[in-house]
Image (cartoon, rainbow, N blue to C red):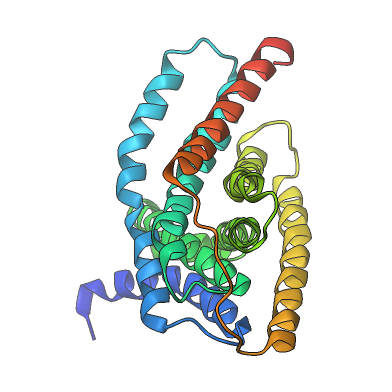
Length: 277
């Protein structure tokens, strides 16, 4: 139908399909669904964060080139800062700057839906990029292998990061205590989860990498299942009640969360380089 471009179109479709399916599944967990238009905008914003990330990555890579760290410390930096911190921070900003201010963001389940939407917007682009690179280097068959592997690993990982970002953010927004702590955890916990995933893949300390990856994903998939089940049960109990009072963090709290998360990652990296690697 599309001539010589048919393979690229097919691969593009299958590369973004896992993200769409996961988002659809999560969207259907919400008893009182968010407006599809707003969820789609959140998905597009997640897609759009690829631009600032692509601008920040050379800065991070240039930084590590000028630091006299050991090999394993550089792997840690690549996993936890260059990848996890930069990507999760951009998703976090989509949630706290755009989604959290929406009138429709009026109950805890919404944080989970929007968190997954922002994460999967980025995951869809990243997956497409990996698949296109694989196609250009080794052809369509290898690209389909990449799609198959990443559909069960990287894409679910991004979705889980969105779940736990939303999980802590809903406590920051709707609970009366520990708002700032939960705001901090809504960024720092996904950074740690994402960083650990990448570190397992990059480090030579893990001999059977995919076994550890599936264990990691399996544990957090089970936890995510219970999070959604609990929130769904609470929705049923409350019914379609009035909007709950929502705490919107000020800019200084958001900046504090981002800066402290970044400094903690770099600090741990420095400590490991000095005393362990």
